[in-house]
Image (cartoon, rainbow, N blue to C red):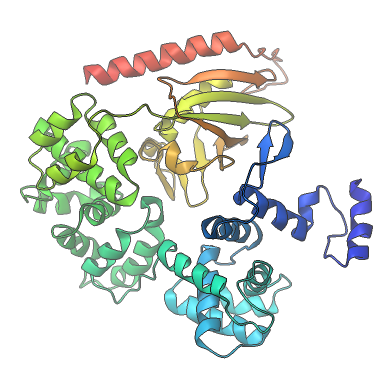
Length: 494
């Protein structure tokens, strides 16, 4: 159907529709059906076509819930930047525990609970007066469409299932009255990229109280915490840079924290290079945290990055009290690292397709993109995922995580996942990165497998015009091979 005819068709069907439609996804009910069908595996994208997938006639509970999550992410905009799943969980809980509430009363009850949790701030009260639709109205409509609410706003069996799943997946409330030990226990269940906002909420009142030092409290609690909780504390304190030096010095001889402290002091040029024993201890501690948070593959990737070969012998030599638990979880023979097939698009049909190992960091991917598009790496860059922004830690960009500490298998967890990469924060060359397929047979180094369009002219000067450089797949792969061979050689020397 031509875009100009879509509003008329929507009126005939009594479907909400904007006055001007650029694409069919502008019609909310169509977009919701599309997103849900993709999440449940009913359709697949093959090249530029959508095709029916070989799927069961009815979705499983997990497929159904995956569709709910994807539709919430696509349709619900939280005014305070909170995860819309939290608002959905709160809405379901209020409807399950109280008598059905009319629209405005439900919105007020949800807003009160969201503020109590600390997920909404001063912006929440103005929602009722705003021209935009309230997030709770969106959520109720979605829950009804998915059968989680009945016609009387009662929570169905599906709704109870969703409430339980949200309870296991969404970030827990971390309030200022919690002890440091309690905070670390909650942080241990969160992905690393989601710990920063709750920690900031917990720290803020203490930062205004000169009699308390919340970072020292976290470090002291980390001594008796699990590996995942301890690594969360180490990351938070490490972000303070030079300001954390006194804290690291206090614990540099501690049996559980000393290796981390000595490594941090060395990174800040306040101590000698860490010993091999410290390197192994920190690697095993980080691998245990990855094992508990994400699974065996991530634990293995941590060890490969830090130790390289002879992983099992190095783990045994680490002296870590939980080395045996890690060895029991690790495979005797590491399997091939899966290969990610990604399409990186810039504008106007300009794109590159590349195969890379899934354990590549975003920092490594930055280097790949520079070669793919012929960039000169003379400007700042930023990756943006659903949860956080990442950049080179050398440049200390505000509110950006370390791109070398975040891997592709977490940034792009499933086919059709997307992240963005912006190069040159002045001209803002924004790339869309989409995971197309995951190949289990693996790949050793990045390889370009296709592309279209000339390389962009990086710093165009109309007074000195340049001709664009045509895309040359063979030349790109030669540069990728040479670059990563050099990186691997430098890693072996270190």
